[in-house]
Image (cartoon, rainbow, N blue to C red; front, top):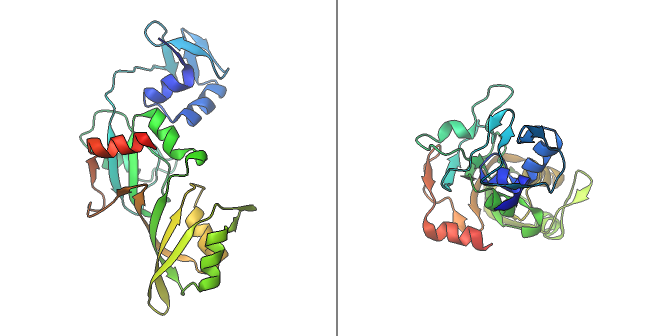
Length: 237
């Protein structure tokens, strides 16, 4: 069957479809011995031989869907140039090559999905799908109604206004407050930058939900395989 090269790479778990396009344009992918840099190139997934960085790409893995409770101090990549521990180090006993769906900052803990399903990764990370992400944050100080409304209307981060978000104060601890923050985007360090913008920096940050999937009581550093019902929900988004 003919499929687009970037979709084939995503289906094989090499990267998300968007990232696969970057790999192709960077000249890191070849088909039948010829480097391909043109997006939209189609291949026969049964007859053509595809190589990434000189290694043959095989599409033999069964789809795997994982929820990890990421601890602080881990990077959300397969490898790190500074040799810091990565979330992949925590996925023991899984033979399939999985990649993180989106990112969580080095200092942020909580719910992180990993899969080898490239289509699902694309769906969950593309801005147009606006998948809800919920965080528990310990902030310096207590946001007032003005700060809450700024989140509601959008906060300017890196010169661009965010999509409407939700900030709820759950507990006022004096020097700190505990807040629930809901966003629908996935910009780099977005929650931290939004909190900086309202003058209530983050002390600690934990993602507790993605869409309708909740972290629950999954221990920090542990993972579980998603249920059939959860996978079906994610694919319905």
